[in-house]
Image (cartoon, rainbow, N blue to C red):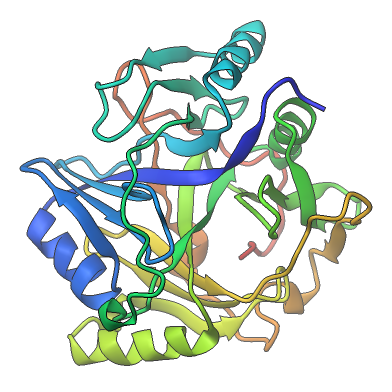
Length: 328
């Protein structure tokens, strides 16, 4: 047990070059709700979400990702998290209420892998559009579901998130030597909030958004093609072995990878046992056997340092395999 309560992954912030171009993709094609727009950013949310946003697109020439945001239960949790990260000698930085749009007091940190995280407990409210079926379009995005990151030492990241931050593991991939190659960790009662994959890092691989059903993904493919975004479809549709979810991977106009995701399972029981997948089992990646393109293996997005704003330095993976095989 930990002294704080991390609830779920709650937001991400991406730098984009052209706000109008990004809006056409995320709002007109995918169906996000635009909560607010300023000269410098667009704030988006899913139909189910009752808070101001789960995705921020900030105007910038720099292709990069700001800290991944986690919601906590109270302000006291933020103070306890700061004490933990400082005790490990890791960077921390306070953002007081009013310094980030629609967000309350927030703690920025770098985790054990060098990945920037953000913790907050307060965000402005917004109308929940779940039953505004007249507004459903594109992929019918419901909510943010998870983030997946490439890190050089998955076992190190796994240990920190499970033992220090109180996450639980739903599924993992292991080598023949029983080393953890990839892991799916959660705080909410689904398969994951945070996934780690073995690779150059820390970097963001993708952000996953929850959809109501597989037909929403199929419909989204038709909408994307009709609007001229067929080339944005990188992988899928398909079904993962890991998580059992139906999926589609897209690349947005700046190159960030977005996963549309539906159909995983409940992980709330305290006696739930993590599911082990062998690294050589081809079903873990795509249950139907279809292989992912090289771009899916090799291309990620850089993080920014919470203090300097420069790209976070990366390192090569500590585990190697002759033929690169990665996770969902």
